[in-house]
Image (cartoon, rainbow, N blue to C red; front, side):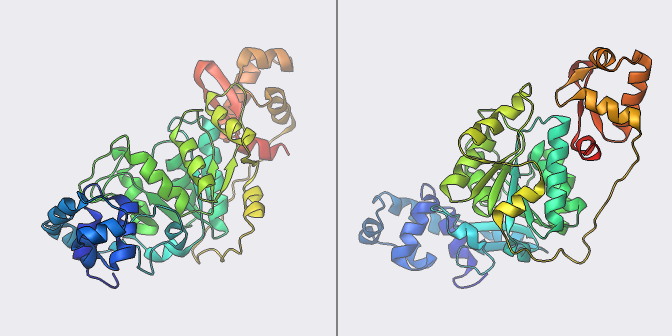
Length: 371
């Protein structure tokens, strides 16, 4: 940590009712955290803050932050105030940047250009695979993948970046002394080892409804753009996309089947001006970034399996919407046994996925093999 000592930063950050914007206004007048904590009523007025904040600052001056300081002394743990050179430059540009970030991992990764990949916690098999494959491909180019550590699309995006030995940044909605959701403890551990976890939330902070919008502004704020993979019309992912637009970031969306309720949010974004993307290269072309080379240990996994004529014909007959075995029998003129056998092979190869109701859908892998 550079400049003023960490104790003052932590106390100012934890001042009740001040918030990121209030802290920025006060620092602009006071000059440093110690002076901000000791600000007079006249200084508060000059910063555009109510006189009642003096009581909150007095209380903050008495805060015991030993637990935070001990946490920061642990291996690979960091406190990053807004003036620190390690603080993400893009995040500093938004209108309400966090005063302080808690971090676990390699702070150098915050210098990489990032793309946020977000979406529903309940994706279709196609959506989950799309998030994974887009993240994996983009990570091999040197683009960092940022997301929110949530179930579904977020987790798939982090996994895709890790599979490529690429850069991934997880923005948590809680304090970094806990993991939400708890089923992502192992994923969080792997990100801390190979990427970086960051949070604005002080240690001990539990998840609340308001945690997610605050987290989402950081996800979009550290990124060059936001890709929404699957999302309902009313979802936190659309909030992230809206924040990205307000922050001057690019917004991308993957279209989906008209029968998939989790595609409706993406379709709404596209109608509102988000860029429709079909491949990861569409994003790279639009961003026009001069990306660094991948990290030395970046892998380029390739899965190639032959597909014979009948299987290609079955994929063609499936189309792009969920379809039952009976419908495929009618379209192909094959026996139910033959169709079921071919679907099993295609499912094992990752070209189709079984979904609710005994129906099947093509996966992105199946689409590529059929090009």
